[in-house]
Length: 355
Image (tube, rainbow, N blue to C red; front, side):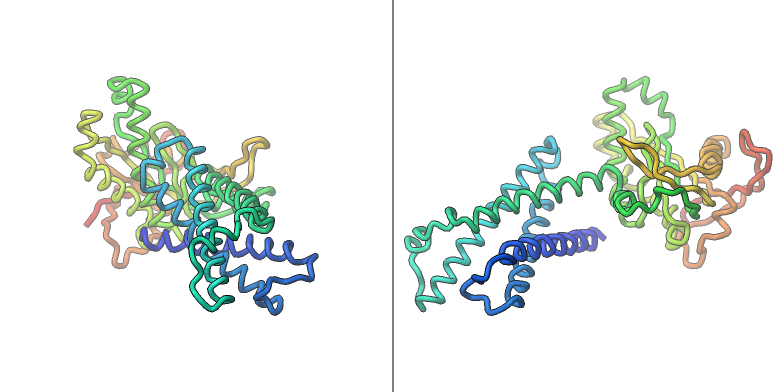
């Protein structure tokens, strides 16, 4: 699945840079009748834009990959942006010299010497300098978009940009609520600083399984996190249950690390519920898409019953009746109807366990 995610990121980077290079080539030659020596018509310019888009998109993806899987990822974000920018500029300079080298070879019909290639002073070319400035602007712009997508979620960022939720609208959603067991006790024993590090380390393990199950994080709430899907996407392939049990497995695989740093392995409890919500953009200076519904209140009350019922994960009857159980990796145990705190009517409650 990681390979699939990286492939999607590579495709996005190539498309984004192809669009950016198409704009650069258009504005560069739109007011000029002098086309490059090798260009016969506009089709050659489009080929150039695609070529540059593939090259710079690949460099963009490579810089992100290196930054994400190295010590750079733990540095302040500005250092990551600087590294990615320098990586791209180094690639652009190398590409420019390589292109110049091949061009000289083609024109003179023999291999140009390194001295001839370097003496062409391509770095002082106005076209190359304009390209460098443009690359910096595009790279910073894409870095900003990427960071915003990390902060608010890619789907949320897209929907806010498209204005989808500027008017409240009804939707069917599935929510998964994860909460740390005995968090108050852990916070008192560890202190605020070490407890916050525990939360960081725990939720950092959640990212891959959320992506793998095509979910989206709605909100972090201290030691708890709320995850959601559109209902039709959430009920297939055991997604809500996968996230909880895969996350628990990830924590167990890191047992040595957690025991060494905190003296225990954190455990979480979970609840899943679905229903109709109203989604709307709220806020002016810090916008976010919020969901308004009794579904969220019921979900929190349902999660509170995990300890009394001795269950790691609970699911409402409304959701259990929609889940595709054929070829499921999990068992659902009907615990009967239950009146949750603050509610007048009972709901069916199911326990979830792996087969």
